[in-house]
Image 1 (cartoon, rainbow, N blue to C red):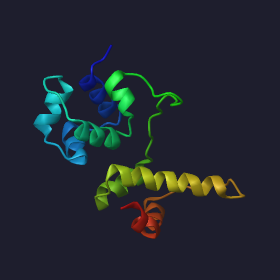
Image 2: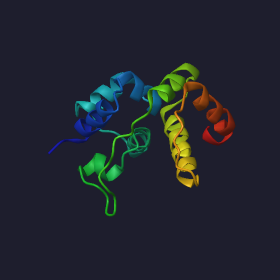
Image 3: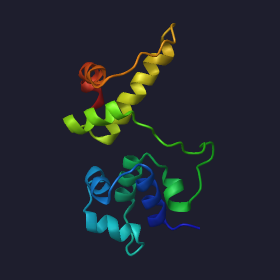
Image 4: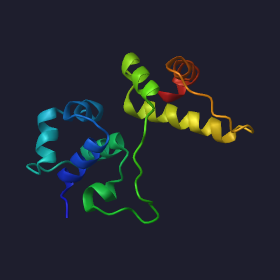
Length: 136
């Protein structure tokens, strides 16, 4: 069974993130994150919660390796390349990027016409501009 640090590392790598990125997003130092991932230090509940929120992972999964009751199997988040490019260009944090993607999916689900027009970087930018006050 994986330890806490191994589960954090596994999720981080599945997102294609470096330790630098996770450390920055979660507000911890890279060296501290490395110690956590290598199970060389313990971590406070507050920091673990920040890491869990950053990774969009449950505390049950990180701490026990089990899904919480009623929690489905985690599915990887697939961010379209155009959105990823825009997010990097404007310095959009991961959580805001995921929220923008979720808002887009929600709009598509509510449309009477399920026609899915291709989202270009400029269309993502326009959507971001219209929602940015709600994302940050």
